[in-house]
Amino acid sequence: DAGVIQSPRHEVTEMGQEVTLRCKPISGHNSLFWYRQTMMRGLELLIYFNNNVPIDDSGMPEDRFSAKMPNASFSTLKIQPSEPRDSAVYFCASTLNRGRAGYTFGSGTRLTVV
Amino acid sequence: GEDVEQSLFLSVREGDSSVINCTYTDSSSTYLYWYKQEPGAGLQLLTYIFSNMDMKQDQRLTVLLNKKDKHLSLRIADTQTGDSAIYFCAESYSGGYQKVTFGTGTKLQVIP
Image 1: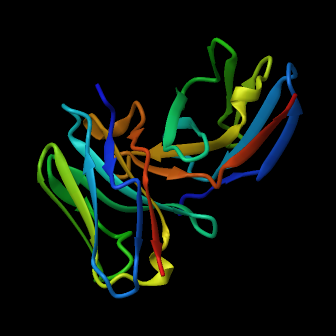
Image 2 (image 1 turned 90 degrees about the vertical axis):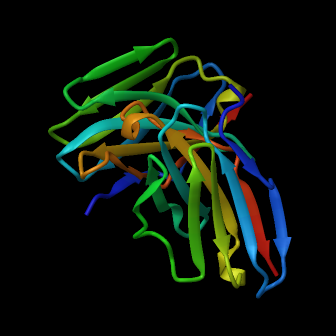
C-alpha cells in the first residue's frame, strides 16, 4: 500500500486566494482526519470523517475552512479566502474502526500564505 | 479537558538509552501512543499500549505506563542517529470515537 497520499506537498499562495488540499486515505480505512500543525499550537484536529460522514468538525477554525469526503478514497480541505495565519503544515490521517490501533499519517502539505 | 504534556527537548549520546516522558490528565484514557516525526514527514506510529497494561516492549523500544500517576514513558535502547526526531505522546479515550489528543512533542537530538 502506498500509504496516505496528500497533494500538493507544498503550496504557496497569496492572501485571499482559494486553496484546496487533497488526501487519499489507505484503501479499506473508514476513518479520516485532517490535522493542522504549527509551532505555536502543535497538532490540532480540524475535522473527523467516519464512513465519509463528518462526525466532528469542532476544530475547524472558521467558516473559511470547509472539508468534504465525496467517497471512501478521497477528501479535500478547502480554505477560502486564505489568510497568512493559515500558514501551517496540514496532515491527513486515516485508520480503521475508529483508530484504536493508531493512525496512519500522510506526509503533509506545507501551506504558505503570503 | 484532556491535556498531554511533554518536555520539549532531549539530547543523548549515540549508544546511550533515551527516556522520553509524558503526563496526561484524562483518567479514562483507553489507549496511549508514541509517534515519531522525522523532518518533512508525517507522524509515524511507533507503538501503543492499552491502559490496563504496565509495560510493552518492542525490540529497542520499551513503554512504561504508570496509570496512578498518569505517566507514560518511552525508552529507546542503544539510541542511534537515525532516532533523531520529534516524539509525540498521545492518548485516546472513548469519547464517542476514540478521539486522540497529542502532546506537544519532544525533540530528540542524538549526538554522534
